Length: 437
Image 1 (spheres, rainbow, N blue to C red):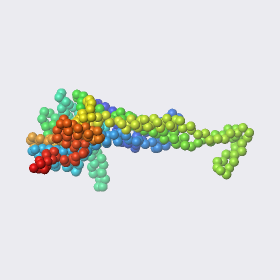
Image 2 (cartoon, helix red, strand yellow):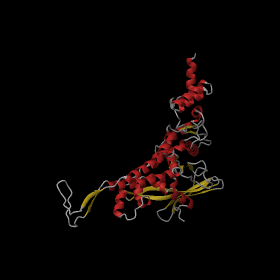
Image 3 (cartoon, helix red, strand yellow):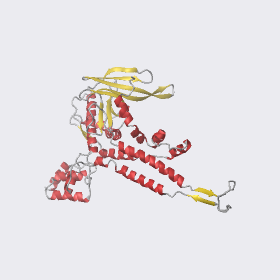
Image 4 (tube, rainbow, N blue to C red):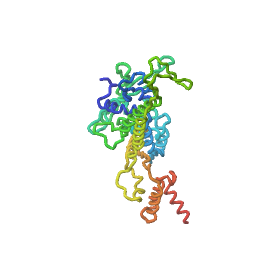
């Protein structure tokens, strides 16, 4: 087995997400896949199929849904607080990957990838010569194999990497490499293999500064099976519907193209009779001859359009349940007071991401010789909150009746965007106290 060969579990993960990758790639990827996602009809010539394929396109509801859901936790930037290392936190909030990407930007990329694939990863590395440590997004597609111990802690991982190297005086080429991390107790080592030839090691069994393998997962599910590194992709059913829409849309476009052109039907006309079409011509036929245009009734076209509309409605609403808070809410006041609870799937994913980012910042702090990092990551989970008039009235009523404190009332107003993001309850209390003097 080559170092670049996927393990059985990683190959299964990769194969299970083949359709998701195709939808994520958009129209060009689906066209390149040909009959895999747009079947060729019996009796359809290859030329006709190629023309139909070239006219088919994907309306990517999956991508639209993923981007919409992934944007929710990042309507405000991620905030990192630390009593001991706030300067270090501020530095990495602004640029975390050594290329100018903010922590919020990297986290948003990882979050969207986890929505597509079920799991995504943040990895940490540092230059051999002791340069600035950095974090980067690691897609599950690039994980070739892994091993976990009995406590589900990672003890080995193989990561596929692509590198561009100089080729001749002016050229360059892309080469494939595999980076391998191994952990034995508190000792972590790394190796790098060249996969262009015979899996020859470029670097082997080099000590790594951390006591853990620097790969932090972000899962779309709260539960991942023991011994597994990947969760089920939450948008897979939507991808199936999107493929169906792609196929039905192709059929609809094709039948419209055919139906728009009437067919001239002639009966009782001699085989050698000249038939010219135009306002300046007349056609003379024998007794009983018939000449007419045959057109499509349009019934099937209407049915196809209705089917597409129904499917589009389902896709447009897909994913909304991931924003719905669970638990019974019975009154208007109850809805207002509980709207900000973090008990929906996207909020749960956001909290998973916050935990992963805290771990990543801890690794970066270790590289910077901070022995006991105390980073706290604040990520937005208060989205989708209702600011309808009845909700605001319910809040005001609860405050007036004394069922809601001033602080909680102002917090709820802030969550709904009635008060600005930087509104400070403490500063507001100080100003009120000054005004009352």
